Image (cartoon, helix red, strand yellow):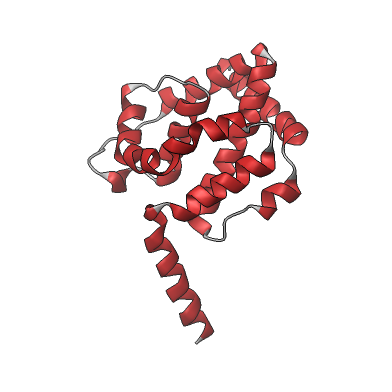
Length: 171
């Protein structure tokens, strides 16, 4: 189907850009130690190399826009009443798409992001220009993102729970 074709083009473009622009050693060097931050860090890196490719080739940019617009249209949430109804990973990806790919969010995606957006704005907004200026420099970009994620207050509870779990495991 057309939607499968759009998805396949975007995924193959993304995989090629990862090979070209993402160094695994640098990625792992700056990988946060908190497990809940790792998913967000991976999304940030994916957005980085996709944004670089989008700047270079209009066809790739169009493929990503079509794919992300399709993904956003397919999102279905029956009950969105609180932050607990939207995972941080879903919201973070929407935030990054909005900030770096300039994807226009539909009302449902905007509502999903709204629960987390203030947290992201508080932690990331002042660094957005630095991140955009350093898209070509993976080490600077990823070390800054790792630092931002480490400082985000939303992960303090997760980190405390992880430490308690590790202590229980050791006992």
